[in-house]
Image (cartoon, rainbow, N blue to C red; front, side):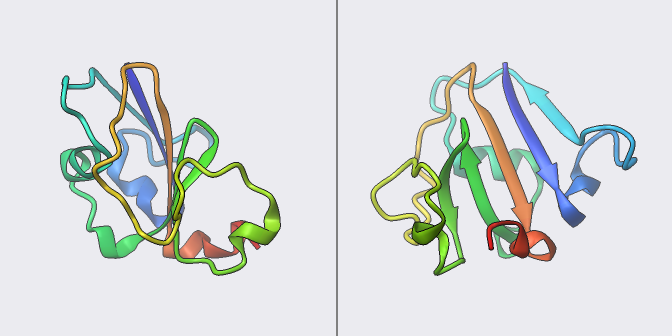
Length: 105
């Protein structure tokens, strides 16, 4: 089961949008599931996304200060936005909207 945690205005794509509960979407991963197919499955416009974390590691960001904040990185170039990164059945993905950009700073 893949877990996608949505933050900021992206919470509207989850079943529970209340601030009292986590905005989490769970689904079975397809064999060829990627970050791109997850985003498409949720109906999120990629232009709304500022950061993506996979299993606690930064996979993509628009923040130029990220390397100085010592986050573990999920890929070699976090600014490249490699949406072909595979997603497995036990992965936890965190997607932060542009309104949550300051979380990394």
